Image (cartoon, rainbow, N blue to C red; front, side, top):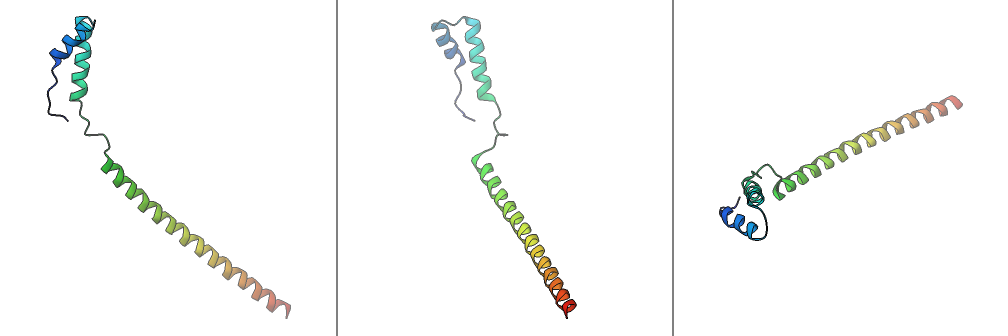
Length: 94
């Protein structure tokens, strides 16, 4: 948050000089003051997004590894079943 002060009186006077009523100028000045005093610390920063990106990449890599492990296991099991079936058929034909 900025440490510079907001000169609300000067802003209100400028708005009145531009044709705003006193009430309108005070309302706009109040909104400006409130917006400057709003706590923005809960918003995500570039550092937060960078950390999240790194975390997501890690989780995606781990998921890819798990999928590859299961696919290769399934292929290995299928190969064993097919070879077993061929051996059984070959023995049955003799």
